[in-house]
Length: 261
Image (cartoon, rainbow, N blue to C red):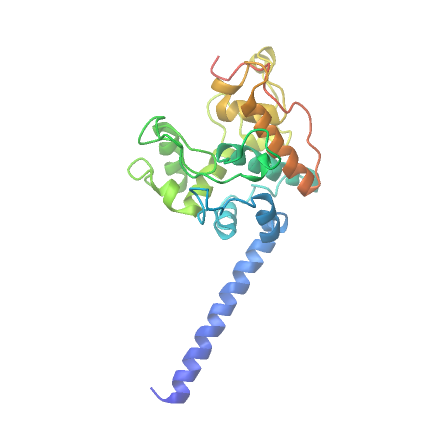
């Protein structure tokens, strides 16, 4: 290869790399990335790469955007900027609680989301213990998520804690998917869920609180005020304030019976 040819190949490779970078940047600037920019992501999760966090270096902005782009309706289809931003605040509010490294009552309690990528004691339904932003738990959830994503998560559950894009995808899949008598978190936060007579009798009303019920109602709902609810709400309010959207109503599930009752 001549020097001129080699130089041409080198320039072509550089140009291709630049185009890929521009394409990636453009994808991020559209859809969810138009609200959750790199700077916003970093401000929302300022301690995710702290040396004290087991998940440091794992939850990247690019992984989030890649996963979000696999679900076109996520964070884009609220019908108004207010609802779009509220959905994203709610998603990060719930997942930040699930992965929090914050100390209850500290001044920075709600700045430690995405500190963990695996359940601390790994005791719930091993090997299908909690992993990822939503802490995907139980073989049935790994099976359903894997089927939806085209992955063998039953055979290889560690993908949820070793591949950041897969990890975010499982969380967004859970968020977007109705299961049994539970509506999707997506439909709830956008006001698209109408409670059934059974829901109404159980005190399950539209709002952020019923999303907590969907995710962990068996432990946190119908038992009065509790620290877990307070933490979820604290994260949510922080993100709503950052994104410039209102909280909506019915933020807790203190008096809601869980969906299994």
